[in-house]
Image 1 (tube, rainbow, N blue to C red):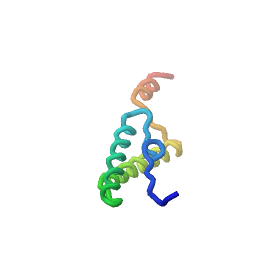
Image 2 (image 1 turned 45 degrees about the vertical axis):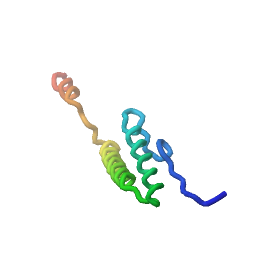
Image 3 (image 1 turned 90 degrees about the vertical axis):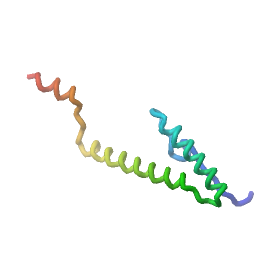
Image 4 (image 1 turned 90 degrees about the horizontal axis):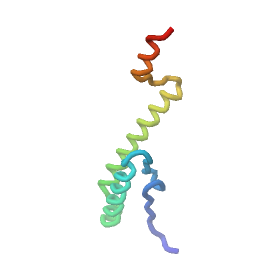
Length: 87
């Protein structure tokens, strides 16, 4: 078997999002970036841009998770209104 480069996309490339079209958009951007990288000897502006964007999303998700795990829960306006009239 020869040496070569392998590119992963979709869920294998950790860009899947089951609830929104974000995974589809990121998947197509990844495919565009991979084609650029193949044609440009490994260089791709699109892949760098996509990586920065996905890294930022991951940082935001981790930050939000820390707040939720730390016992801070968001309260919706409807929760505040339903608790205000009781007791």
